[in-house]
Length: 455
Image (cartoon, rainbow, N blue to C red; front, top):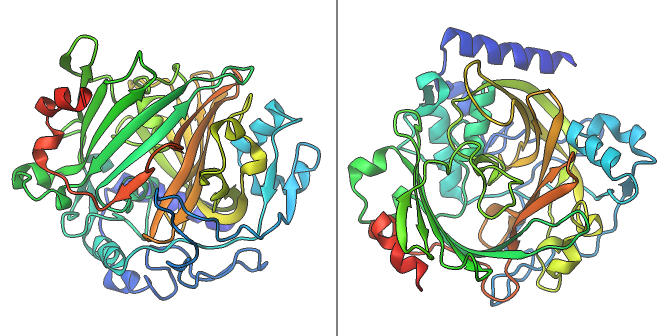
């Protein structure tokens, strides 16, 4: 481990041990937009020239958006610089994660990583950059790191200049997602032979600042409101999940409800948290695997390992094109790697170790967080024996027209069972995503679930 990684790891441990969990100084915050990007990434490129400087991100007119919301690929004309395979991976080992190495070992004939020129595409609206700077000056950790203080003035990117592992993870949790949104997405859990059944979802997400009629007392500790309706297959259609997420999920735990269309009943759903099974995923993901990681961080001790340069999925527009069908993407063992794109980027590496006396099917987890967008790009999940069990890859891209970093899809690979789940694929038949939608507090109540299920 180099000196920088050692210093960052030691700083992380000392801050957590001493309880110094405060916002940064004015002098530190002044680096945002100068030596650091407005969201906290290093402005400069690397010494080797393989990672360029950040120069403002991808322009809003970088490509076209069709009537259904699909983006054209602004890098369609580029060819891979090289492709990493099981045969040549030794020369790139230092820029690969343990999870990626495990995928090469599990699928030596088919898993490959086409590597393209690096583009630092991330950019968000100016108002979000300003919110991040406010967060840097005002936001701190409370309750052992499980909640935030001073965050209500900003609501985005809690710690753009992070001092420990928890702060990095909170940046992922509080990142900008484009405000309220509605989207139609598809999930699949292919069998080992590649056969699959599609599960269609209609998601709605709303944030307290964008819900005009929300109770101010409720809004103070609210993070987001999430509603998910299953529209196919027929045996699941009409089931609806509702989640209220709080900023401090220890003081105010996540509240969740399920409407079962067959029973026509709404019930509390405490299992929709932590390692509870993910919806219709054949047990291949947990509730907190969704969005790479979500929910309360309180069951783990978090360590900031440091920064690394890794080949991570980036600018994966090809996977989100309407011309690319599910059968093109979903293959036995893993998604079609010929459709993927990897680039060299700097990432924050964070390790989570299950606390003594706590329960989770994952005893240890590791996350690799893109420095520019604060999105988790890669994850690793270990079982109680210390064996690597599941490997996550999120296929990052920039919604250039809306200035929002997003995922084309997330894949979670079970390297022991040889199966995986892919979630977040764009719906081929209808508008895939709408940003800036209207929301009312009454639409995110348990009483509203029955009507949502019978639409």
